[in-house]
Length: 203
Image 1 (cartoon, helix red, strand yellow):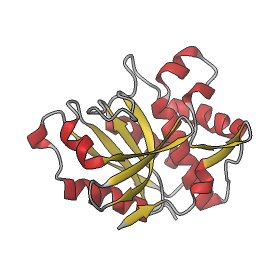
Image 2: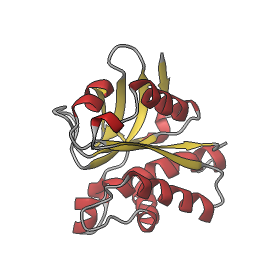
Image 3: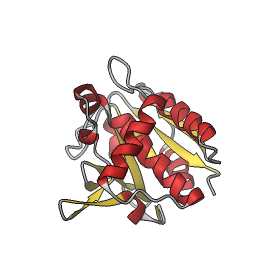
Image 4: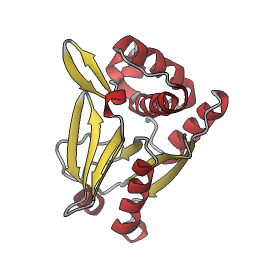
């Protein structure tokens, strides 16, 4: 079964005359932000989607996306080695929602380093599917890509779709691209794990 955000157009901008999926940390003005800003960039895209749902405020240009990224930066400011804990984005989203009067509630599921402690594939796909059914992109923290070359390691991306058929094909948005990868293969092969943050109860 396929699950996806209902309004992919809210996550799609036109940049240099072409569709650009999601936001891009390279749009931050400072060098450190460009290097370490994948977490707040992902959080900004999620927050913008929730605001579009609840308040009708759609981010429709790169300039507006950059403003949203700067507004979200204080809520998920990277540490020395980046935003490498799942709960940091969850907490940042919840603080943003509270400050901006939004009804969304961020929740997380971690994928630990140790294989036996990881959630089952069924639990993981259920968590993602429920988040997408609630109509908001999820934040995906990929601490190591597990050999899936289309994914960066030590990186956050918005997750916008999941097909629960063979391989559980998940679609993330990164650097303007929609990238589909085998979620089951990642879960099995990643040596460091990662995590997912979903938003529930946004109306």
